Amino acid sequence: MTIRAGALSSSDLFRADVLAGLSLPQKRIPSKYFYDAAGSRLFDQITELDEYYLTRTELAIVRKDVGAMAARCGSACLLIELGAGSLVKTRLLLDRLDHPAGYVPVDVSGEHLRDAAAGLAADYPGLDVYPVVADFVRPFELPPVTAARRVVYFPGSTIGNFEPTEANALLCRMARLVGPGGGLLLGADLRKDPAVLEPAYNDALGVTAAFNRNLLTRINRELDADFDVDSFRHRAFHNREHSRIEMHLVSDTIQQVRVGDRTFAFRAGESIHTENSHKYDLAELTRRAAGCHWRSDQVWTDENGYFAVLYLTAMS
Image (cartoon, rainbow, N blue to C red; front, side, top):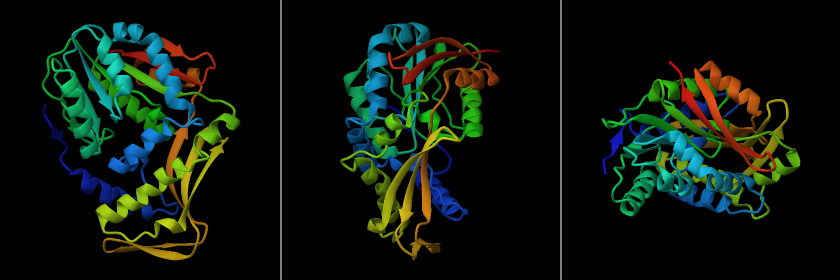
């Protein structure tokens, strides 16, 4: 198993993004930093909640149609997963791929990535696994593997965490990464009634709230900060204008927070915007992909039309 990392360490990127985000008029921290070891465990708990339809819906689609998905990927493909998670869906796909040239999980959380990749490599001894510790929104190096086709696997509706212009840029970057004839297997959460959406991010057990606040615990531990975690409350709501769920951490009081040698002031009621989860119209998403020279070859959905998995081919 090979470990590759980008030019900047994940710690350096984390510090730079937090300091820059807390300096904005609307304070924000990128949602990719939710996933330290504790955050990854909490997210795994979220996926089991009654209110959180996303994971079980996508998983049901994959279980039903994984044969067709693997056939689209083709023989001897190099599978590149951006933002590797618990790998449950990945294993279903790997079980059906025809002699894959290798598997490249890419994630900014090195500890979680190494653990997940090591477990996968042990269970698939004939598979070459090349975990890459990197922020996939920035350029990163792929291992020098000969493959019939490169296929990016981007499940879990992570595309929804990006602003529309950022999502467009990412789709274009993925097309360049795989090259003409390469593929993209993309998960996307679709637009639906807010009565279904909002409980998925405001669960009765408070697991999502703990997941959100764990971000501050991580900043305290890794960046020498002094957030009073209990003085921030979780807030998630549907923004109809932008067709997205927003998650925030709201300060309950006037306070100052130190991060390293920087200090940031908070007003009572001021928030840190921690996540967007955009919900897509399928036709709109296909048009966005076409703008980056992707051709939509096949779409799989559930019976309720809650979620979609698309296979796209990069055109020359």
